Length: 340
Image 1 (cartoon, rainbow, N blue to C red):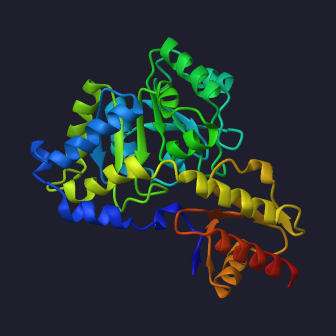
Image 2 (image 1 turned 45 degrees about the vertical axis):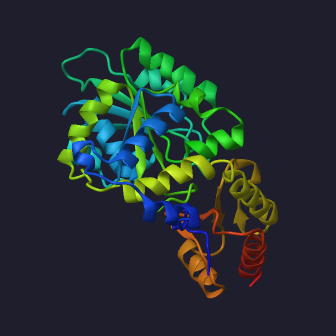
Image 3 (image 1 turned 180 degrees about the vertical axis):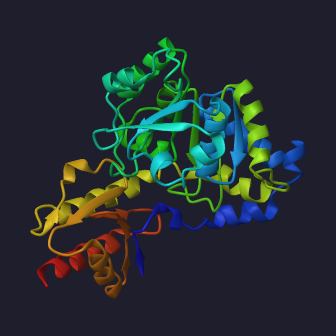
């Protein structure tokens, strides 16, 4: 099978497996796992933040951040197709008791003017705004890179209103590699950030949350409340350390393969798709004369896996498990489905 469903399907490298076997461990809840401690320290340094905390998943990282930044009955501004709003099972409402304020974006990119208009005035009838959430790269936006200047404008706006900004940066290293913008420049436009090791970076488990030291101190309490305290977590954190050191630059290969896929699909009849929308490792297509679910079944018959993103989109995601030859095979399969 050629698996284009997600970059979460990546398997740990041999170097990661060796590191996991040899990892020095301790009890992380007591702060005694040296490998986790090293991962947190190095992640904070790479991301340009004071401190960091290892969590089991990106969703946990985002939710811990929301819980730390907000209080029940407040409102959180986010883009209407954000992962936090769309794919995290209403966790922010269920756990933090906040009201999401989803705003329409341009392929995931929010207008600073629209954000400014959404910040609530001081009125007893209205929920106070407590947080602004951004996402870079933007999943449902097709892996689009949110421009640095856009993030900077929203961050400045937030600062003027004494609001924190949390970045769902699950694929922030994709944004940095593809744009050439150092990751610290993106994170300078955030109060906190979550980034994922188990997507394109290829580690088996985990994300990091980074931010000010006082924020991380309180976030640890929320991680514990959510059942996220891990014990000898150095076994999995060791793979994340390898990912941080060896897997970032190779993301460029995934971007090259995504562009190859986009070029192969460009101009095909029966497919709504603009190659210019492909910034990183995600390609979203819209079949015109066949239901996406049926299209997906036809792909499976040809040994290709993809993700259906309702109501009308199919997502194709490149990763280290996908070769150039796999991309060429996928292009031929899609052409065959559209012709027949």
